[in-house]
Image (cartoon, rainbow, N blue to C red; front, side, top):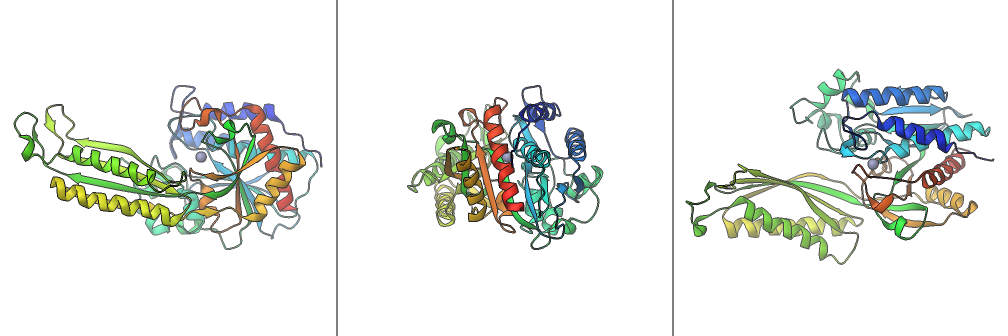
Length: 412
Ligand SMILES: [Zn+2]
């Protein structure tokens, strides 16, 4: 089997997809179920049609594009990622995995490969938490990790429910119908930019993921007492922002003190009320994002945060209310998928690193219902979720080659 990757067409498609955006180039903003997102989907579906793939979309907007195998009833081999993009993002996150999956399938078709198992491109809906506050909605529902009932409770910032928004966008049917039947996939592989600097630093073109880190996120509301910045004397204050500052540092120290570089914790949002220069902050809302490859260590960081909450609340006479938004378990990538990836790398003399995915991906949830693996390609300076995100054509082409061979091995 002599695979030829059409890198030119793939790059042109990357450029075209980046024009479906609500931001000034080079930034990309593509929030799920907006007119821009729907246009991007329509364009992508036309590319899948052109490749002779059978396309269907489910009730939450996951797109499946299938190349039927010789045994169409056998479990399929899946690949894919997402095309939604957070505000002011770049053009590679997720998109590279989707378009590489499509090009991998076309390359296999061109060289005359006949799969026994069907090969399916999956474009996950709502990977980014931008609109509904929870990431990976599509894969959570596909894998039964989120119930349809819980999904129906989700609302966007304007108060519209997921159900209303998706139906208005043309996605009908019950959310119950999204969950995949047992044994639907024989295996699943997601190609993604690393979103970290390790491959580039090691001058290594490919990464094979062993574990996907376990994220947890919390919202913390702090209620103190407001007042005039001149009038209220320091001993009388219950400043919510000063309390938040102590908590933010406690979050940082919880991650720094585990002794593992796999532990990370971030406060990414800090909303201050009323937010006036001469007014003592009476209320603050923080978000806390905690991740680790080890569930016990991850939960240990959350416990450290909870004990800091109590200390700060008692010391500063403020009320502190934590709310756990999600706490997912980490995933191990499947040995047979990793072996298929590493065999392909060796066949082409391509060095690879075995690594941890510190960002979480739809593959985390798909790994609960199918043997799953991930292939990373380098991205410049490790940048992601910003307009200067970049992966080189050579790195993308190498990724597609290994992805295509891996799909062929798994679908043979
Ligand atoms: Zn992504």
